[in-house]
Length: 225
Image 1 (spheres, rainbow, N blue to C red):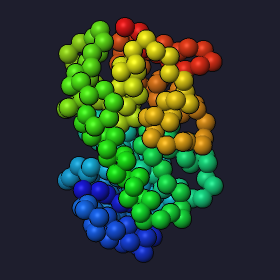
Image 2: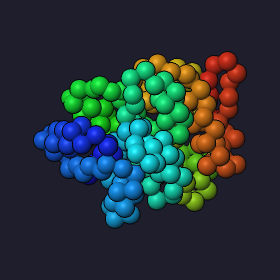
Image 3: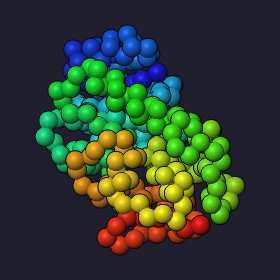
C-alpha cells in the first residue's frame, strides 16, 4: 500500500489511478489530518508526500514520521515545487528517501517509487551475505534489521543504506559524492552536507558503536573494523 498525500484532487486521483494500474495498491489523502488517521490503522510500504499542504505541511509531517519509532522506517518520497532547492535539502536532511519536482511524468514517478522500494527491500543489492557484522554492530540484510550488542536499533532507510555501504566497504574511505550517488540512487544536485547530517544521526543511534564511523577530513567516511 502506498499513501499519497496531495491536496490537489486532480493530481492525487491521477497518481492513485496510475499506481493502481501499474501493480500497486494506493490511497490518497488531501491533508495531514486524514493521513495521520490512516497511519494509525495501517503501515504503508511507502509515502508520497507533497511539501505544500493545507494546515500541517509535508516537511512537518515528514519530521513527525521520522521522530516516531513506529513509523520512522517507512520510505518517504517528497514532492517539491519547481526550483525549491531549500525544500529539497531540508527534506533530505530530515530523512526523505527521494524527491520529485513538479511537474513530473507519471512514469518517472513510478520509476522513482520502484527504485526506493528496491532499496528498502531485503538483500537485493550489494552485500548479499545474510549477516554483516563488525564488532558489536550486526545487520541482517534478509530481515532488514540492525542490532548493537544484541539490542535492536531503528534506522531510517537512508541510515540503513549508509551503514550497509560502510559495512560492505569496511576500512575503505568512501567520499561524500560516492555515498550520495550510491545510497540515494541517482545524482543529487544539492549539497553533500545531507550525507553529514545522516551520518551524524546514524552515529547517535548506534551509541558507543557509532564511534567506529570515522570522518576522513576533506574526503568522506569509513568504518573501522
